[in-house]
Length: 436
Image (cartoon, rainbow, N blue to C red; front, top):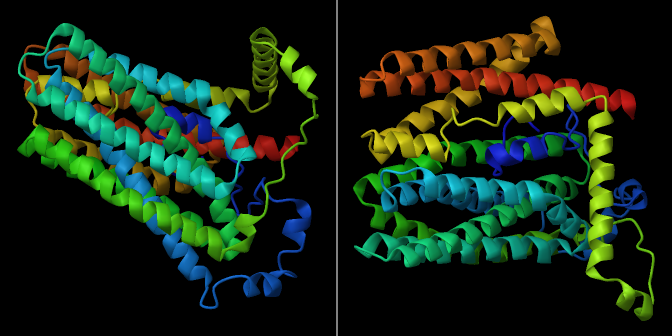
């Protein structure tokens, strides 16, 4: 993972932690053949002749930033907004939100490998367009359902359960589409547009990270303020933004694709052994299932025996917590009497501390090394959480004091969490470079 987490939030952070981004920023896209990479400079003249005469790198980068900003903004707004909508529709209980979050996260973990395989095999433009359109469609449909549930005064239990199931299904689709867009753009398109130029690549990576952080800071705050006015208003604004941005995203990303000839080159993927029709017909579901199990078992065996397993698995465990501004804590704070605007402000402070950790982490690692820095940050995180939970239990009768203690402890612990994350990432990269 780079210094910050992208669209994928805490479910996807461990998934992106092993991305092939070196500390120098030099990345060769896995989708380019070696001949394409080595001959990129030689083919600049011929490539330029096939593009718009007015094409420049800054134009393509700018359009890529616009598309990524809209995609990340809508994803962050809906991610936090859906928690507020569910808390308003199902007051006094955490069960619907817990099911919603668990299934959504499980779908990302289970199907992310399929998403990666799809990205490897399919055309770049069609893949990104599919992610854009599918995201916007399911978010729009979800907003319609949220609006119906918020307006109907006494819906039957069957209707509520059925619509909740539909919302959960669409949340899974939205999450997978967000991962598809994130991986396609940040792990492939940026590299190709930069044409393996180290300076340009660093600049573009930094800009993409700034976009992620700004959207993570302002998106939830924006929808939280609107929800403080009324839940129906927030839902309608969320719906309108999705319907409007899909057009801009759809054509902006296409403009980048046609401006950069390298994006139109077919991806280099492992060859598939051809099978005749008779062999394909004989393959049944059981054989496919068996192969999938064997592949998963092989991947797990490789992961558990890899030298970088310990730091990778430990950081993944740290993200398995409800002591963050996720759905469960937000719903609890709403039930405790806090307004959506107040919670959005708290979350903004929490994210600001996370951003601060991206400067503190490298500074501490430079002073004492990544291993000791990781231990220090881990101690900080555990200490803050221990103090917060202690205040929560000690003053359980005083809602204001107990919740503020828990919230402050959780917010301060994010410095430690991100410090551990960065330290573990450096250790993983060092181990991986030795293995390679």
